[in-house]
Amino acid sequence: MSGVVLNIENLTVELPSWSDRKHAVSGVSLEIRRNEILCIVGESGSGKSVMAKSVLRLLPEPHVRVTDGRILFEGKNLLALPDDEVRAIRGGRIAMVFQEPMVALNPVMKVGRQIDEVLEVHTKLKPSERRQRILELMRDVRLPDPERIIRSYPHELSGGQRQRVMIAMALAVEPALIIADEPTTALDVTTQAQILRLIKELQQAHGTAVMFITHDFGVVAEIADRVAVMRHGELVELGTAAEVLNRPRAQYTKDLIAAVPTLTPRVREPGPPPPPLLVVRDLVKTYGASSFLGFGSGPKVKAVQNVSLEIGRGRSLALVGESGSGKSTLARCIIGLETPDSGEILLDGERVSGLSRREMRPLRRHLQMVFQDPFASLNPRHRVGHIIALGPMIQGVPEEQAWEEARELLKLVGLKPEAADRYPHEFSGGQRQRIGIARALAVKPKLIIADEPVSALDVSVQKQVLELLDELRRTLNLSMLFITHDLRVAATVCEEIAVMQNGQIVERGATADIFARPQAAYTRALLDAVPGVAWQKAAE
Image (cartoon, rainbow, N blue to C red; front, top):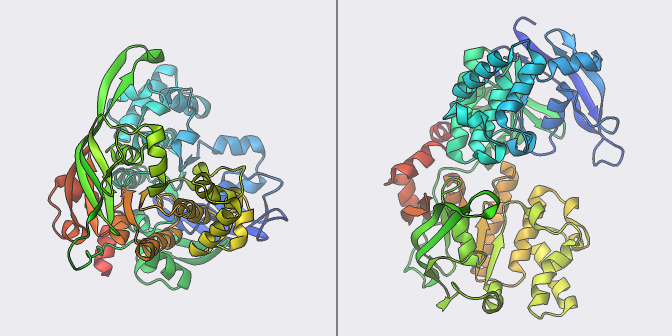
């Protein structure tokens, strides 16, 4: 047990009787040593997060509860300790970094005060000493202008800055163990690379043990010392990072590795280019920031600056860039949800920019969108069949025919026709995304805009959805604008790429050409930031 910080022995966590399986975690045994990063890998539902919550005694008991096993932390069985002792350990000796910092941080409290609370509860430092420690933590996690950051509310920071605040909070009292639950899933690849590098550096500097939960083997290749692979609550493989990444034994591990998007670019189809379906010329969109209570105006933000691009019939273009680069604003202008300041947008030769809502209505059937979060974009009170059939019914299709077509579309996207009678919450994330695709196809569009449609999905589900989109595009001769921050994903489905930074297109060309010879420094930075790029290149 020398050097072992956490030892999980035969852990079994029981689920409610109405669940699809009896145990969330079944007989799992593993240990984490000091100065080690153990990556727990698996898809949604594999039991990763339930195991982490068991360590922190945060299970929603009595419905989900530990029925067997021990969790030994520094020699003490956490499952047998009284609540007050567990509270002293939680946030002190064991800290957690959550996937979504905007949810984990208090939105009405300045971030400096939130870190101060941790120090106030777990240390005997004076207020002036606590403030000094907070500033020191801000510098440790590479946050610019610490004085400004500690006076800011969470919504005033970027996603990467909020995640750094969460890491600073976790490090506040130098815990023996940090549990990081998918802390980089929702971040841009460049921000993700910075956060992964930061966690590795801080872990080595402090000698902390880290349990890092992820579904992406690219992330594993960047930071893991050892890897545990879970499926359906069971541990299917455990070994060093080199062993699991390069010589996996379990078929499930091999499947997860195979699902990681490759760095092999899509090759442009031979023959003359097809005529353009979408043409964007010199598009400009500027936002004016309002001052307090909307009176007066603040500095203007040039979200889209003189952008021009074309998408041919039946072709796909990936629009790649970080958050704030203007990708989604450009998409909203194309689909008619935003009005550009100047420039023009043509769809099949017909102008769609600058039209009134009434003038735009008959054209909306030609332009459809697949959103990043299908659960937020699907009405939870309506059955799936109604959600898909609503668009055609608005266009004049009889209800009975629209429902029949909805069932056919569900079959087309790989779901059973009976799914039409169920509600969105009854489906997994990948299934909901398929429903979102079916809804977009229901009005038989000419162009689909897919805005980060797979960024929140497991890699295996991500692969299925990407393959489905590509197959439907080819089968139905659709054009697609695919918005993403990950060049690996772009290479999977698109023959051409446009790289966007600060509202401008900085590079445009065939996917194969950009991967082989990127011209812009920003494009090279995006390629270098892909998690596991060195491992993938070595494996090719």
